[in-house]
Image 1 (cartoon, rainbow, N blue to C red):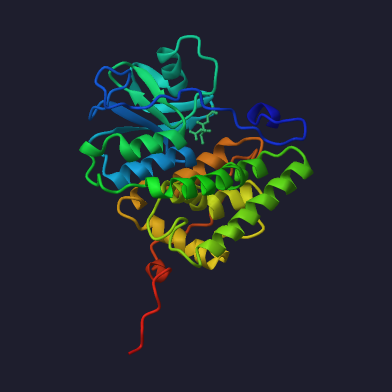
Image 2 (spheres, helix red, strand yellow):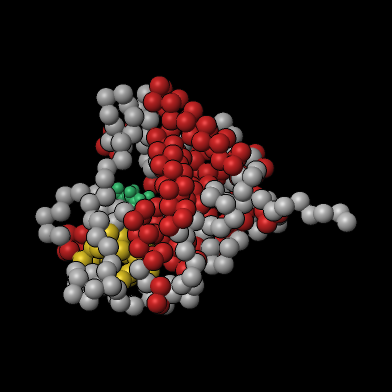
Length: 312
Ligand SMILES: N[C@@H](CCC(=O)N[C@@H](CS)C(=O)NCC(=O)O)C(=O)O
């Protein structure tokens, strides 16, 4: 049962398949996917950490008027994501993938950046969709000057991403979907090694790469948001909670309190999606009552990395 849900290698290590649609938006009107407001739509599930990244960047950049959102729900009966309101006559995301790509046999994942004009998938890799949203649609963004992937910090952001993706973002899944004790212990050790390194970094700088939010923070945020409520128990990531780390917990509240971000966060949907739909990990489908977080409390992160104020 687990091996159907979670592909693995010969050591029992969880292997996440590659996303298959990897186009970008271009300013050239003759290109396959030209920049245009109100043409592209994000398909997202509120429980999904990868889709959540795209909602956070859309909110921070102020792209609500330029890019629409279609929220999908997980359905074990349909074997995947279903639309609240049928899209292009499709009830499920799988049908939409097949409509756009007859004969498609890959995974039908969210997020999807969907072209409503050509009825085509532009991109289904969250790490790339957030780069597109950061820069391609600035002329329609209410915060065009917010650059979450500035040239000067690209190398530093990429170093964090290259460590955080395998050990934290995908690392929690490697813990939860491991099929041997060794694979689990390796994943759990590298997960907490990285969280410990991040805790140290956040004692010196407000965000991962200094005093400004970058894509590295957003990619980390959506995993941290789910950690204590879902991954700690369901995925056995239980050596420590985010609440037990003074800097990481303040950082989580700081990001949550950025303009528009709280509105993208639905902890009840997260709990429901994970606990009711990962049958092999939680056969009864019982959704636990805890632990709800109060992320609206003060974070005082604005003092980190500032020169100590003089007493004279
Ligand atoms: N690498 C992809 C992963 C997306 C992903 O795994 N999404 C999950 C939901 S959290 C999904 O849609 N799974 C459905 C399936 O595998 O059929 C990304 O970051 O965009």
